[in-house]
Length: 265
Length: 236
Image 1: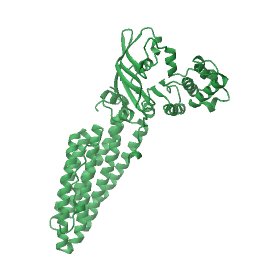
Image 2: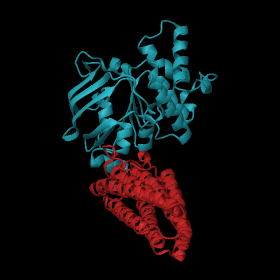
Image 3: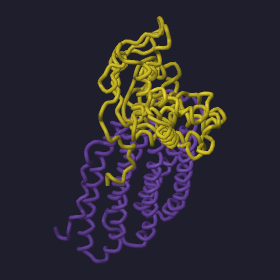
Image 4: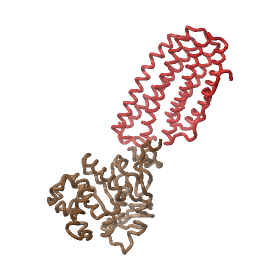
């Protein structure tokens, strides 16, 4: 009987990709993230949900040190990628961000050709020995971004000339071009129509076979659809973290329940 | 959960659908009561009314299922809201089946009214039906009050109904062996008793839905089955 039941998308591996321990984030005096402990698994989509200002984006940005760019931001605690502390002095943030890629809310292609958008990362990280190899990386990345067929005949045209949904998929292709191990997505579909959203979600499910994906979303349904694990943040606290199916049918914490059922909590 | 939804229309939808369940439950309770009384008092007119009233019960079930489908499509309910919708769908199905059994009891009543009475069997069936009716009333109360403990008690009470059925089963066997003229009425009475026993199972299922609704989990242990007639033979 068991093989006939609807299961949550199964998680094949149990290995921990990112472990956060007692993470606190301060913006000046403001305490944005409070003692967050979470383990993000490899080859899994983890969704961060929570009301605006709950700290989910802040926490996401800690995972590839995007917060370094904000002067008043201070991060304490440990964040380990494959057991290595990413805030260690010896870690080069640029190198880290090649390992932990990011896709933003608004599509932000470089004002360059479609080809150069994708080739940018591999070039600066020296991932291709020659033009042929670079061509190969670009094609593979665009295929992974599920946009190859739409742009293969216009690779020299500017990336900014694509539609919003195509631009976002181009940005995803750009993010995967450096073969990251983790892909962070901060509301990747909030500027997209339902069709482009469905394409990006399909893509996320595809990417999960190779990467660990962490997605911040305001759409509860999207979190439910794409993720295997869900974390609910509220006022800087990680309130609940568990299998997505469980969070959406029988959450443990009343704050989670209030939020996902659309009640004033 | 006492808090209101931010979208107040969602609250109205859920309240409306649950009001329909309560209305349906009230009609089904009345059907059990009337069908049992019609059987005992040989009131064919009352039996005819039970048969006719089943249409309203079936109609309500359809309305509830339509409402539930609409809420799922429009509101994408999660967590406790989802459990409300799922339990409403199952409970309306249970109530519909109980209504059908009451209707069947009423149909057989018109046949039984033409045959001689078999001792006080009809009164015994009525007592059993009365117990099921009370269980149903409590099950609906436990639903409205979100009372998982009361629901658990109801599940245990089904054992009494099963035992009443076992006793009736043996009684009917005895009557049939004593006098072949009893066979026809006893067959009908037996089907009625079996149907009442099935009603009890459906009430149990409603109580299980209440536990699921409140706790998010199915009731723990397997329910003890006390209906032993499937292994009972003549003369034992």
